[in-house]
Each structure stands twice: as structure tokens, then as C-alpha cells.
Image 1 (tube, rainbow, N blue to C red):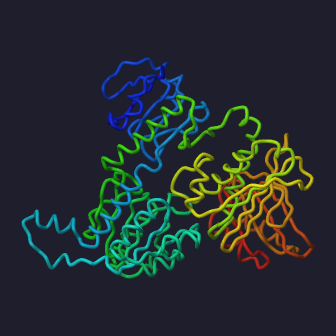
Image 2: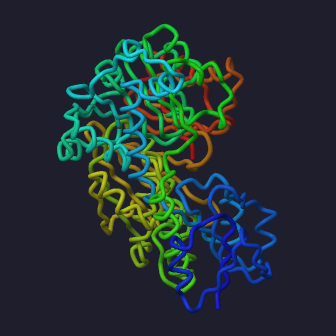
Image 3: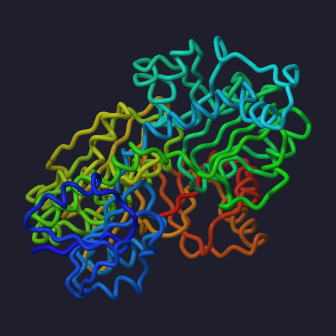
Length: 523
């Protein structure tokens, strides 16, 4: 008999798979069920319960934590992983709910429905104050074209809108299949009448819309954010609302929740909701039912598709390939961060003793590392292949005899619209993971921490100029590795530094005449 604790409010309909199972007993905290903490095998939560280190210590037999929703911000995933506890979520359950809420916000925004509603409730009838804008024929800019962005595009087409998409990882084939225009961010900002954002919140997307680039927006544009607070800089948004450059904004998410910037919330052309994207009966049921099924499957020894922290493969296999499993994820992340254009094909090649092992799981770890930088959901080796397929990315693996002198070799080759990236890596006992080749250059460095990848000409003084800039910005270089083919020709440098690099430092590096590019990598 397995014992499952439901810590937050979840309907019996959502818990049906567990309630109907003969070998599972449910305890509900909201109904004051009595239970022995040492017997609990599984914990189900929404967002209210904080699953921290202390709570995990109170549940010594815990095997799996299920979040009935997408985000796992309330779960200490690192602590759970350290204790060998699987964490699962429901990444697809609220897609339709969020897409519909976004479109409702768009329609309400351009027709001033909330303001007009309040006007009538206040016994007024100011029809001339609320002359709206039709959606027909307008250009909808969608920034981030994952699951939710795609669903919004379908709804916009029903209103006969034009769709302009900015997603740096959207392939031409997928854009053509979905009949949308794939543009740069600047082009979307200049052409779209309405813009809605649907990217994950990362260091690249934080402040994606900011004081500097929002001047490029089409005058009179409407902005919508039902994704993550912080993608649109709130101070910059308020400024452009006050100038009239932005005609209105619809916000479901904020940098701080509940929001503290009352001037923005109270602005006459802003409509706001309290993070309601997933708040429908159907979405709440879907996410609960999905995680209930996965918890039941996991407890019964079956594989699950939504584990976000542990690979669902036998331990004896994992222990053998674990170093290359982790290396694959790292190299995938490096390829993703190094590519500035959509990638259409990824080939993972193995050589040496590793070809005698199970390599398909390593290939999927490469995909997971690559995709995690690019999509708005958790990616692991279980769902990576499905997400790659949905994104129009072909992938495959090969075994070859040529190992370039290494006992084990992992090679990842990514082909894209503009980029062609090839990285070779190995793992050596006592030395750990090493990158041994990048884009035609032999090199040798450890892929970890804050790195700076520099492409330059092999000429005297380049390294000295680089060092001076780092000294000026009080940033220490921990290691430096150089690769070249011919003296005086093209070369690369990989530097590891003690702290993240600031934009001003990178801008100065790019002013050095013999340096053609400088890219930061965070591993």
C-alpha cells in the first residue's frame, strides 16, 4: 500500500486516478486527515505549500513530489534531487487556459471593455470615450512561439489578423507550416499593432522590452503580458504609456506579485488581472488529473514523462553513463548558447568505448540541454525528443571508429539557418569533462562556470589588450585556453572568469580590431 499526501486543495475529480487505485491511500491536509509522516510515499501540491528542506526532512520515505501546475518555484528541486526524490509537474495542462485568457485580454484591451464596464456601473454613459480598435486586418506580434504562442496564433487567424512572430529558434519550415511570418524582434516591434509575449523569463528575456528598444514600437501599439513578470520592464512601460506611444497594456503577471507599482496599475489605459492565466476549472482539473496519473504510474514502477529532475532509466545503466549523460546536457547547452539562429538538425556522434553502452539516453540529454535554453517549459531526457519534433528540429545519433585519440568521444553537430556548430567533448577519470574541439579548432578546457568564447586573429597584442580590459573592470581571468590552425590566422580563445561578465566589458572587447566575436556562456 502506497501513502499519498495531498497538501493543497485539489478536487476529487482531479485525484480520480489515485482514488480509484486499490493500492493507494490518500490523506488530505485540507480535511485534517491523520497520517504518519514517515509513511508518506508521494506528496501532491499546488502553489500554496512550500516544499523546502525542512518539509522534506519531515517526510523521510518520500519518493515523488507532484506539482499540479507548470511552475515549481515553491519546490526546492535541488534538495529533492539530492535526496533522490523525483519531482514531476503538468507542463501542458494550462496551455489552452492561458491562450484563451491572453486573447480575452487582447480583445478587452483594444475595446476598452473594463473601463467601459466601470463607467456604466458608475451610472455614466460616455460612449465617445471608448471608441475602440478592430482586430480584423491588424498585425499581432507574438514574441515566443511555443505551445501557448501557437495556440494564440490559431485564434488570431479566426479574427483574420496577420501574424508576425519573433522567436530566435523558430525554423523556417515550422513558420511556413503554421503560416506565420518569422521576423526579428525589431521588425515585430516596428510592424505589430498588438504585441503579446510568451517567452520564459531568463537572463536573455528579462527586460526584453526596455527603455531603449521600446522607442522602436509602432506608435499606438498595445502590449500584453500573460507570461512572466519582468519580460516587459514596468518602469519603461509606464513611461511610454504616459507619452502615449503605447496606447494600452494588459497585464496578468508582474515583476513583484501582488504588484507594488500602483501608478502603473492605476493608469487609465492599463487593464490587469491577478495572474489568472491558468485559473479555469478545466485547467485545474487537467493538471491535477495529469499528475495523479503520473504519480500512480511512478509508484507502480512505470515510467513517467514529466519528471523534471531525475532520469527515468535503471540505476545500473545510469551509473555507467552518468558522466556522459551530464556532459551531453552541458554540450547541448553550449551549442544552444552559441547559436544565434534557428537550428534545424542536431547530430550526436559517439566514438570509443562509449559505443558499447546505451547512448540514446545521452542523445536525449544533449537535446534537453539544447532545448532548455529555448522553450518555456521544463525539458529533460524524457520529453526532449517530443519537444524537438514539435519545434521542427531533426535529430539523430551515429557511432564511428574515429575517436581522435580519446578513449571516449562525444560530438555534437548542429546545423541551422545561419550557424553550423560542431563541438567535441570527452570525460577522463581524474580530469573530468573536457571540451577538445570547437568549430574547426582543437582546444582543451573544462566546460563549467562563466566562460567567454572569443573568435579572433592570431596576432601579437590581442591577449594583452583583452587582459587590460578585464583589469579595468576588476574581473579576474581564472583560465585561458587558445586554439589555432595556422600562425597568424583565425583562432579562438576560451576564458573562464570569476563572475558574470557585464555588457560594458563585452562592448569594449568587441572594439579590439582583431576580435570578430565575443560570446558569454554560462554552464
